[in-house]
Length: 454
Length: 183
Image (cartoon, rainbow over all chains, first blue to last red; front, side):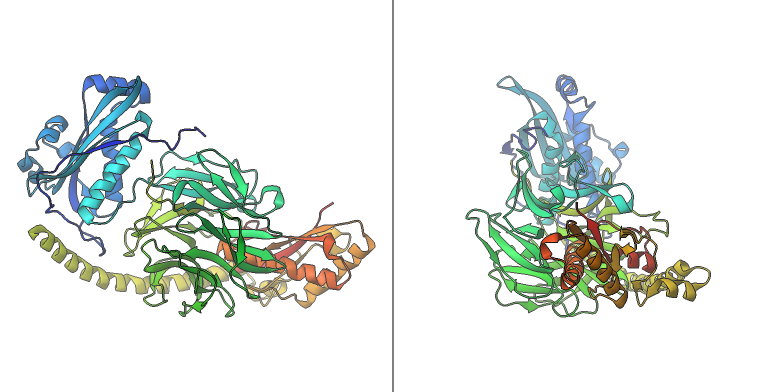
C-alpha cells in the first residue's frame, strides 16, 4: 500500500455567498419520491491546466469527471434528479462566472452546481485547485461555494467534499460522501470461500485489498475516531483472534492475550477502548480492553452466548445480543456491565445490534418465519421498524450521519450450490432508496467510516 | 420559504400515496414469500418426499452418512446438531464414544474438534454457537477418558459448510462438529 494513501493536502477558502440563507431546502426525514431537479455543470478547465492534469493523471477532462462524481453521489441519495447535460444551454465557464438563471429554469433545474479546475505548482509540486459554487436557480442567487487545493490524485475526494457541502446546504444534515467502506471481499465456492479485507471509497471506487486471502478474515470495523485504524478478526495460524490494523503503516497487532477465540470486535466512540467477545470453554462473554492501559475486563457473566457488542455514541452504554432467554435477543447495559436490560420483545430472533451515531436508534438483524430483516428500534426497544426483508441479510452499519444503513445480503443457492452470491446493499432510514453497493467481488461485513480526516 | 412549503406539501401527498401502495404491496410480498418457501422446501424433498427426508433427518438432525468421514477405520469423524442446539443425540454420543475409545488406544494422537453452524444465523452468533458445539463434543470425549490437553477446539461458525445448498437437508449436514487429527 502506498504510504501517502490517506494524506490529502487541503487549503480551503470559503466563497462568500451573496445571501446568508438558502431558499432551497429538502426535508430528508420522509421517504421522497419527488427528487429535486439539479444540474451539475461540467467543471471548467482551461486548455493549459487540462493538458498538465492529463499528463499527471491520464484523465482526459478532470473537470467533467469531478462533476460526474458529484452527480452520482447526489442522485444515489434519491433526493435529487440530475438533468441531462445535453440539455444545458450555458457553457461551463460562463455558467460558473454568472449563470443565466432563466436558461437553467427553462430546463426545470432548481439547483445548479458549477466549478473550475486549475493546475497549480506549489514548491515545485503539482496541485489542483478546484472552485465550486452552488446556485439557487429560482432565487437567482449563489448560496454556497468554496475553493480547495489538493494533490491531483485526491481528485475524487474533492468531488466527495463538494457533494457533502451541497448535501449539507440543501438538507441541513451532515454529509457522508467523503467516507470509506471496509468490507470482506469473497471469492470461490461456498465451501471454500476465500476472504480478504478490502477498502473502498463510499461510491465503490479506489478498491484496495488489505489482506491476501491466505487466512479467513471476518468483521472488519473502523475506529470511529480515526479512519486509518480498523479492527477485525483473523484465523491467522488457526487461532481466531481480534486484531487492530493501522491502514497507513500496515502495522498489525493481536488484541490482548486471551486463551480462546476473540471475535465480534468494535471500538468505543473515542477509539480508546475495544469491546469484543471471548469464547472460553464453550461460553462467550463480552470483554472490554482499554487500548491505552491494556487493562481488560469482563463485562458479562452468564452461561449463555453474549456477543455482537456495540457502544452508544456517548460511550455510556453497550448494546449486545444474548440467548440467555432461550433465543437471541437484544440487550442494553451500562458500559461497566451493570443494569442489563432486554429491549427486544417482538416475534422472532434478534441479532447484531448497532447503535446509531445519532444515539436514538439501534439497527439490528431479525429472523422471523424463515426471513431475515434489517430494522431499527429505539434504544428502549420501542418503535421497531423493519426496513427490508430478504432470504438472508445481516450486519447493518450506519453512515456517519445516521441516515443510511449498509449491510450484506446473500442469495439462496440451489442443491448444487449454484446461485449463491453475497453483496453489499444500502437503504435509507426511511425504508426507501434500497440500492446495491457495487463491489469488484462478492462482499460481506461492511463497516462505514466516519467522515475522513486529512 | 415558499418553495420549502411547496416541497413539504408535495412530500406529504407523495408519502400518503406511498403508505397506501406500500401496504398493498407488502401484503402480496408476504404471501408470495411464504408460498415460495414451502414450495422450495418441497422441492428439496423431490420425488418421494417424506420417506427420503425421514431417512436422512430425525427432527432436523442429520442422520445420513453423506459427508461423514473417518477419524480412524470404523470411527466416524463427525456428529450433527439440531438448529440452534448443542445437545448431543444418542447417535452422536455413540460416535463420540467410538472416537474416545480409539483416542484412548492411540494416546499419542491429539485432535482438533471443529465446530460449525448452518448459514441461517448471524456470523458472530454462529462463531459462538460453533464454539459451543465443539466444546459439547470435547466435554463428552473427556468424560470418556480423553485428557483435555489432547483436544483443541476451533469454531468456524458458518464459514466452512460441507454442503453448499440452501435447504433444510444441506443445513442439517452443516450443523456439525468434526474431530480432526492434529498430528
